[in-house]
Image 1 (cartoon, rainbow, N blue to C red):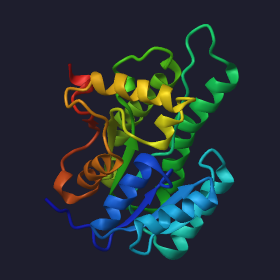
Image 2 (cartoon, helix red, strand yellow; image 1 turned 120 degrees about the vertical axis):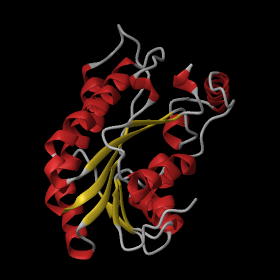
Image 3 (cartoon, rainbow, N blue to C red; image 1 turned 180 degrees about the horizontal axis):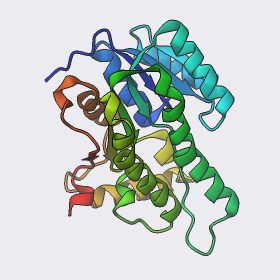
Image 4 (cartoon, one colour; image 1 turned 180 degrees about the vertical axis):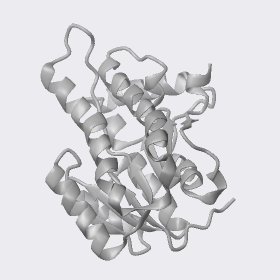
Length: 250
């Protein structure tokens, strides 16, 4: 099935790689004008080329209010109003209880929770009434992994943002939903392993817990984002949609 997003404007944070890139590619394939952010200019340029369809890259860090303001200034000058906002930028690291550092706690909550909040809040003046906001959650919000408690807690916060924000935005008919990906083959996930051998072990262990027996491809997450961005999901609001091969369902 295809979903017509022609004439729609989409903003995807963290769209320079991984799940964000997969989402941006799928939105662009369906006709949306896509703006993506990323911290590293070279990687962002490569992503814009991979997305095609006249995508626009805006270099910046979503934890910086200055960079967020600059992002929305670019969108306002070249694309507003916004029909689709994907607050996707995020990350985390393995740290078991007893070894969690204040620095890692602040970094993870700052990126996954605080930045998501202000990514959405600062976009509100540019969002079209009836727009679709998509937040990137995680199966870790409901299913535990060893040494991943801080990351899981941030994603549980993301889930609850959606529940509350649909009430705050109900008068504008703006929908807010969460995509909860399972293990997805991304540079971020691979970066949790320090060696290729360690990555193979991590990949195999994660895949073994998935009923479909494999990790997701970022474009598979992107296809679900397209659904939530489109009129096909016009009565889906405040939901958490798992794209996890069944991992968190058993």
